[in-house]
Length: 154
Image (tube, rainbow, N blue to C red; front, side):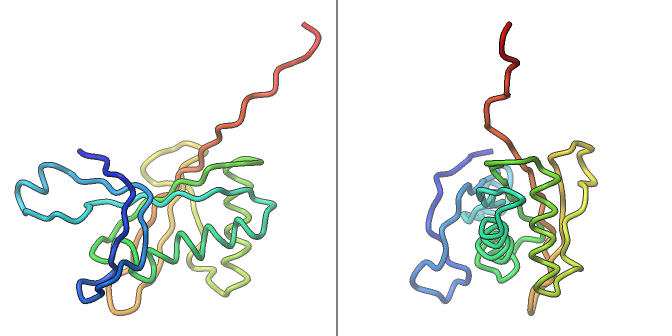
């Protein structure tokens, strides 16, 4: 597997000017050798997130989930991946904020649910319809990089 640099991408072959920029494209060597497919075989989109920040929850959906749903990323894929960098709170709080945004947009069927492949608190999944093609399943990982709070006065 090769992790490529983020790069500009075209959602369709007929588009001459790139209309997206992928964060982390993945190329699987075995697929490349067998099928000679040069495009990324998986795409990971990364976003900052905090459950109580309505703007970041909106951006996670509009500039993340919807790029897959509308075919800007992974238009030929049935699966995509997102990483939410937690800048506050925890994964449950982030998911609640994202689901609140989806509910406000009458997209309740797209709500995130616990992962079926990893029974950990930071892994979630969701399904999203796409016009003119099969739905896309997204796997979400919510990761925290904040320093743990240590007890004072030791």
